[in-house]
Amino acid sequence: MKIKLNLSAAVEDIEEELAQAMQRAKVSQASQIEISYGTSKGQTKKRILNFLMKKERRALYDRLVKTRDGWGRIFVLFRWK
Image 1 (spheres, rainbow, N blue to C red):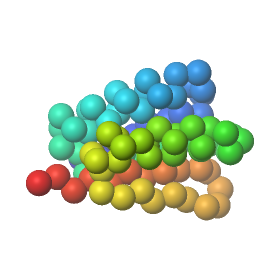
Image 2: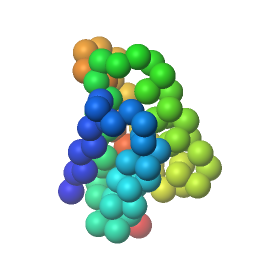
Image 3: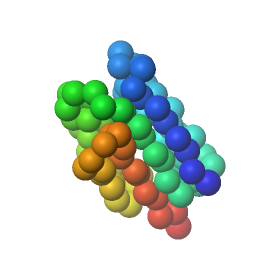
């Protein structure tokens, strides 16, 4: 299962949206979350990465894959036991 999250429009409540997506992934044992933040400034990407790099969040997922060109996306990949 893959969860898609579009954060290009909702800039104010990024942390809340990310927390809900992480909770859904944990409950449904999803294989990945695709976070799209669009062609916005680097601030949005930094906020997303800072949220994901917190110790309690980092313990939930296996790795991150970040896109470099075009439409900005971050893939959060899980390996459930």
